[in-house]
Amino acid sequence: MNLIIVTACPQGVATRFLAARALERAANRRGWSVTTDSRGPDGQADSLPDAATIENTDLVIAALGVPVNLDAYAGKPLLQVPVTAALPDPDAILDRARAEAAPWDPASAGAPPASSGAEESRASAGKRIVAVTACPTGVAHTFMAAEALTAAAESEGHQIRVETQGSVGAQDPLTGDEIANADVVILACDIEVDPGRFAGKRVWRTSTGTALKKPADTIRDALAEAKVLESGPQKAASSAGGEKRGPYKHLLTGVSFMLPMVVAGGLLIALSFVFGIEAFQQEGTLAAALMQIGGGTAFKLMIPLLAGYIAWSIADRPGLAPGMIGGYLAGELGAGFLGGIAAGFLAGYVARFISQKLPMPESIESLKPILIIPLLASLVTGLGMIYVIGEPMAAIMDTLISFLESMGTTNAILLGGILGAMMCFDLGGPVNKAAYTFGVGLLSEGSGGSAPMAAIMAAGMVPAIGMGVASFVARRKFAEAERQAGRASFVLGLCFISEGAIPFMAKDPLRVIPVCMIGGAITGALSMLFAVKLMAPHGGLFVLAIPNAVSAVLPYLLAIAVGSLVIGFGYALVKTGKAEVAAAAG
Image (cartoon, rainbow, N blue to C red; front, side, top):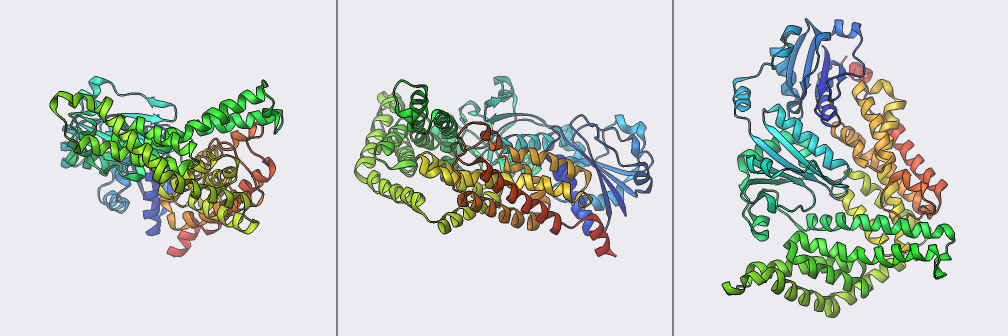
């Protein structure tokens, strides 16, 4: 059976590749020969299959989220389905194609694809949906989840508007009229966003990962099970349907607000070193001013921001002041980022307890959020930090920093390998974010934590770069859509966006994940072996253009190159190609 798969989605990035890979994998299991025709958001193809391939094809499946010109397949048995329908059950799509595909008539291109009665019913009963997507760094998952939700909703006949809260803030913000007219609100967020504007609407909470991998299920669950969001910060926290907020999301919220301060502070310190490593000690110089801005101000504000926004995520605005006070005390007491995390959770839960459990006469209830909660929560948090938490946390941080500064080569290589493997395990998931948070926290403690941060960023770059290398050196094992994804993945990897490798991991996790973990562990270990130090927690290779941001540029590039080549050639070796599949079937 010769099959051509045509895919297209509105943003033209992730969903079309995931759909093509899901269908191709299912077809390969049946021994079919597969060719892919991947289209951009405008429906145009970079290159169509050649005439001989089209002539010899037995079946065409068009999984589409936008209008596409299919005239090239005139007369061929063809089935059109929504692009998101291919993700949950590709085998069912193949069975349906064999049973229902009909010769394609270009004259029917202006009409909507044939659908079952259930599909027509859903389209006629289309809903208005608004959504917000946000992840801690606001780069990849934010926009990929938005794209997946858009394609899934439109394929089901719904109207959707998605607001992305990325690294530069909210883009395409939802208007008041759009929110008021919406039937349901989807919050696909890994960090806390202010839900107050959605009070009175049916709200469904989920993660960006779930929205990306199961967009159609997310839409259906939201329409069926979303609950009305009650007004008030604490009622809003508990009344929405879907995933509940927990400590992990609170921590990531704090990290996301702290991250720009870490980046700015670290790079400003690096710029001060341009004039000499000790030039900042001379008062009145530009080097001293840069060090004062970066090290004396930005780095001092990191821990208060971390703690403050952890508390804000837990208790909304009443938790912000006590959280920042506790975070500042953590810095003054030497408790570091671990003390800041503890202060944030303490302040947040104390503020929430007072808000929910402390009864007040109605006459002074209005003073609760602006006077009583900040006062009592700050008092409890401050005293707790000074007399209970601060000293033990300071001892732990001193021990950790001393270990990092004095560890031998073997321990450094082991730590780098572990952190590198964690960064490559789930590509932006909980394990990846745990390693990244650890590195950012150590970086806020000064130069002692800059070596682990270098290993973490280098290891986070190599999966996406490696997939690009693999798609180039073993071109015959990759379909055209995969080669396009490989080129995009390579560029994303250079920018330290690990999620560029997600389409490859989604199709072939049992091969991609182990290979990436091996390459990441090697990169992390080499970075620590070379004692590379990094002053910024993000930016990829572009950070190298800033003087002294990386202590040893050439060894750092070598570590990244070695890990990328290990992943690229390793996956090229273990990947099952088209020829191998055909041989196995025979």
